[in-house]
Image (cartoon, rainbow over all chains, first blue to last red; front, top):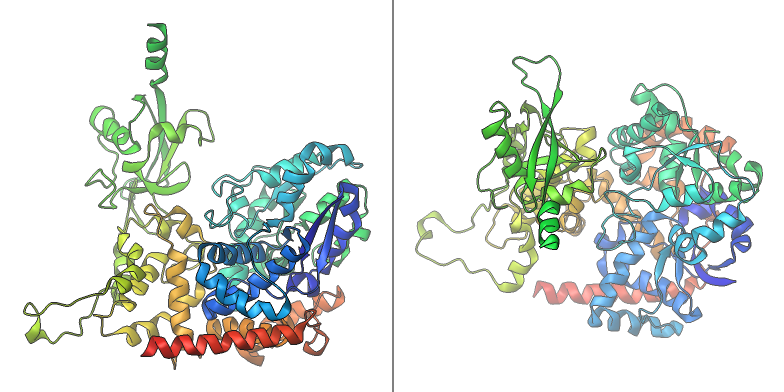
Length: 282
Length: 344
């Protein structure tokens, strides 16, 4: 059983609770254990970095340092948390002065940021550590009946100088996972586009227009569902779907699954067990 | 000999350029023309287009000037991605074709089309004017030309990368928000604005910043990083956008915008609970009236699915929050000290 420190994303603790619950169902089936890091705090959600760069460094040095103390990699299942914490790590690793400054403060908690733990997305762990062949061998209900639109979202791809796992112009990791689970991917030009989440409360019309494009293509291509490795993308594509499609005058609807739910379905858990019923579009 | 001959064969092949065509004066809708030409390894897309124009079809239109990645004229979408034709190798594109051996050439997006691969740059230039994308000198006119205006190296390093921009408009073409609203300021203009605002010789920082925080300005960027990822000069454009935001939050009088309030809510929530209090985020960003009008129908659906974020008292603080708060506060003292030193 390979162990990881699991970062608790704010949204998975509130609106998308089904995401962490679904991982809990199947993690042992795939030989991994995600140890919940209850000490973790909000990463700053791609905002704290410019509101206060120093607090941004402190908060995320602390998040990573807790994982380092356990001797484990930090695993994240939200794209923005992934990008944000990795950005902080990059800055900390490049600056001995910044490291010294935050470590001086973290000392009171018995913590030290050393840069020894990697910060990784759950999707990357499934592909690189568990392995596609091992996953394939565990599939109980192949997803062969489904045509699936893989929506990667931005912050698992861009900036590639911080992420670097997939080619942001032509990502394949999620496609590979879908295929390992027996599913069929559709050609989906919006796979590496934006969902509009980060401007939902500031420029709602623009955000919904961005989301509607991604939804519209999946509907046109007659996909059975969209799958995404990011709960923020999920919140827009599922929660705001009706509003976005109405604004763009697009008819129809399409379910949106979390990556963790799609894996769960293939491993034999029911949609109900996985929390799919909690989605707005079912 | 055989090896050399093979290498020669590998270094030359027929390639098809599928070029977007539209002459609005004649055509009712766009179409694509295929041109199959012999191409040697080392030939750029621009040279391939030149070959077509000189030898096959003189009617295709595109902009070209320096042919060396300096002037930014030949921005176009090659296999779907905005880039410069003069610095893009045909050979490198072959592995990116959706159809084997066919390279798709299209005009930049998010700008009005003039003909074929030529787009109208005027709206972009108009935005650069609107956001005063030049240094408005603080030096009195009488002193100009008589006195040096020195810039420290430390200052220059803050906008060195930003000065690399050649206005090719690739970032404009790739921007997610511009796709949704053509009035959006656009990444290139934000980059220029940041660069001018960071320049100590400039005297209209506050005026420019006040315009940047208005509607369709800096807060409408949705952090998709597409601009930065496709920048032909690898400029970290998001750093510039975040730089303007940081500036707006620090400057008095610029904070009364939804974007600023939204960003500051993160800071405030983290300092108190270590967690984001999502339930009240819409209220704090846009006020009660907006939230009720815009989010109430959805809130009802979410309540039915038990999907609503918990009210503030029920948001569980992170474990060890007391210690965390002390650390956060200590960092606030560091920041205060930094500001004092910076202001000296």
